[in-house]
Image 1 (cartoon, protein in one colour):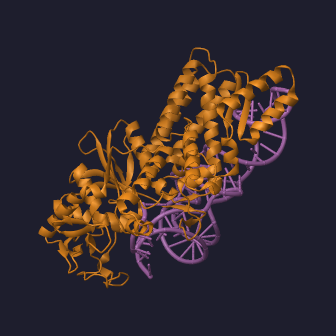
Image 2 (cartoon, protein in one colour):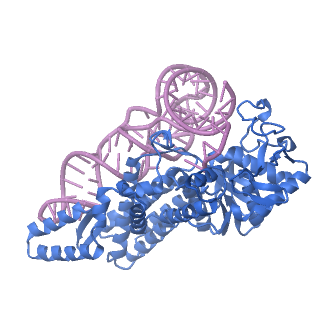
Image 3 (tube, protein in one colour):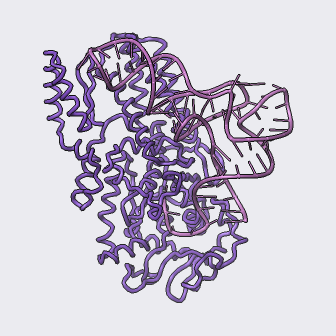
Length: 492
RNA sequence: GGCGCGGUACCCAAGUGGUAAGGGAGAGGUCUGCAAAACCUUUAUGCGCCGGUUCGAUCCCGGCCCGCGCCUCCA
């Protein structure tokens, strides 16, 4: 099964296959570590994670490089405000970023590349551009890319820049660029700012150069896929193409994937609008990491996703349904054998699931056959028709579902616990939802003991005591389910 | 102003030139000591509005209305 993925460059669905016939080599723009990641950031990383996981499910190995931008204007500004060097300012945010990825079950790329560790590569690239006549230095020592050196500029974002007047919306006063659209490759050192002494002068890299340099360092002049948020298409990715292809005269990335922005309550998320959420904000409100993951990946990546708390609640319920069903399969007793209809249903769900994802990662469509199978199987179990062979076939489908969605296996406790600890440690207790604190106030062992006591009470037909225990637990967000096979409990 | 996307039931949302997946929520029922879970029934003769093409359009074309994104740091 070959993934057909929309390619920004060609404007159509193109098959995504490794050009070397083996490993898919991809580069995805990572975070600028000036603050904690917000859900918009994570939507992009989640969608790229879906891509990775689906490729692997189809048997394609991946070599995925992700940069970490640990030097840029915002970092320099924030570090200066904090009164510390950028080398001290960014590490906590890098750690937090990886912790957040883990919480959301986003797989770590094979290669992480930090900008500050690749300055030499960037300098070499600037030198090559200068040698090619595509870069020039201004009086203050900064280097710029000469846009006129790359006639294909705009081919990714389909922009025709010929009609744009120099200086129209660009600040031309600061530096003496040849053309207002020329972009910075290297920024000359300014007093008090982080800088490196290099053959092209003392300074720091412009933003775009790092991705060109690091992508080529790890993936070569040409590679299979480059991905990122839609905002990066222009100018960031356009600039990467210009820098890279001017030097190599080869196509930079063959395939470009752009993830659409998410909206919050119908508006672009921004701090000034007051609709800005970090992952940690949501965890502290009591939403589970799995629900956040599912909510953010359930709308296909090329569509705007309108994030709401209701959507998070919906996702929570959907996950509960899947987990309850999964548990039912694992703990139930089923006679040996196979039911032809259920076998066919499982095979159909599997096929439709894969086909949906292969169609430009249509996650919304991919969910449907899974839930249809859940209903069919639940019905069969209720009627005593599900056999061991059917259970195995259905579990195999769920396994493939979770290979991409990764929400059935319950790993929600740890991220929440860590978020609460972090909040307490950093003076953010006010952000912790009371219900979450209540839930955290009881241990699994205490719950087990109360459940056992309730079972005893029920045997003695002391329903008053049994209900009291159930109500007490409910107050702490613990839900009980009685069944023939015993009592199952879960934290809401 | 330029470029682009979207408007599908109470909410989210997929989708196709031949008559509307899925999830959530609500209502009724089965089961249960009561619940929960599960299952069954139910909630769009309808897919922003108006024209057109067609035997037939939610899906194609044109116009209009509304919302959103990008064009500048931004995932």
